[in-house]
Image (cartoon, rainbow, N blue to C red; front, side, top):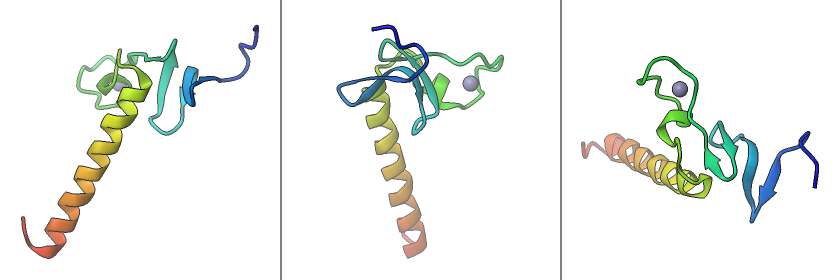
Amino acid sequence: MSRFDKDHYKDGEIFNGFDYDLQVWVKNGIVQICGHLSPECGCNQRKYAELPVARARILEALETKRIAEDHLKESKGEL
Ligand SMILES: [Zn+2]
């Protein structure tokens, strides 16, 4: 086990490397905090910092669903 040149997956989740869906760096299965100076940078890297990537993926999916539902309501004039 000495492959540092490729992303490393474990149980279908990225374990060490870059998660392209969430756009975050992952180390030992945990989302790493970004290096942006502003705490309000708004990137996923900060939003999901220190969470297991599997958890971050669930939160992201829920948020995407909520936004989609809001748009749907808006288009129906319910908001
Ligand atoms: Zn950031």
